[in-house]
Length: 436
Image (cartoon, rainbow, N blue to C red; front, side, top):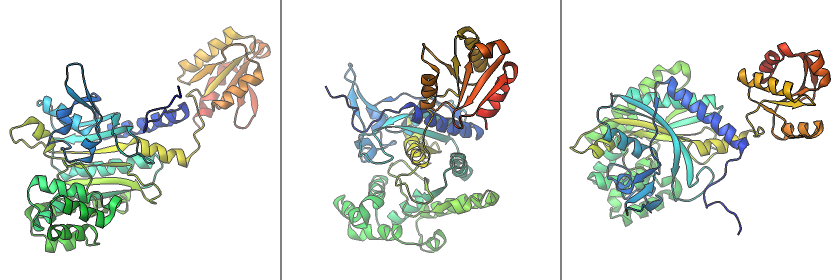
């Protein structure tokens, strides 16, 4: 039998997993810095939850790409294709949650879709959401949070922003009426980058829309018109609301000009996002230089999804952002050489001094310094080769001579330099070296 992974999934070797975990730690630390609390939801959801009209909807590409299965009770299930629908289901099942509810979740999601750089069939999402407020301050917070995350990851990005209400207003003026028709049209328009204007036009015509209806919306997303100019031609009430929200959002960002945010946030009339549940602000994050095709994060406002799950015509305002861990890792993999294959920063090598070496490695661990020790009876050269192969930066050698003098021999694996240190001060010196 030839051993293979399933198509569209990958093993993550230690040198990548170490970096991935550091990225997750950065994300969760920033999330908590902004007051978001952790939540965990199951990978399996009932299929009707994933297919609910208030969720992705039957027409969405996400639902078409859902991995479906049936349990032994003949219940239809699906692997979650995102974290937002599960969050909406959770809030709907727990109506007494204090609002606004600010939560983050890091977990794996699954889509049986096309594979390319930055897009796999099993991948991680890191979501952060605020439920229970319609204030544009919440939308602004996500943009600032995203810029903070990518600054800490050392990536220069641009946040592209649009508003679904503007698009809905234009659809209304073009004679495309009704929520379902508008969702259908926007899902087609969202494919502009993939299939071009002609492809979107053909999809709209195939979907039952006329050329007279399709042309105005395609003219808008293909133009360079700015929101202020659009204000003069917008007659739709919903469209005007979208323009007002967009203006308020950029006013808050302008108030943060000392952080240099405005130059990194752009209005993008072509931005739709494929999920049918978005109701207002939509946003996506890309590398500033355009060298990577996929977005690194995306989200927006979805004020009707949770209320739809709860029934009774309720509206629970919500806004969120999802970070794509896989595309972020693809960029970091290209940007820097991943060397470390273990979290250990120190490797202890005993030479006939097992008891003393065990004590020293334990002292390192008690001092919160990740450390490993030679196992077995390899010689010095083999142990040094092993430490070098795993990317461990420091090796501590303790032989009979070191033991008698109360010393250790510290070897820097990068420079090859060695120095003898009194055992009593060695840990302090090691801590200094590994934090440089």
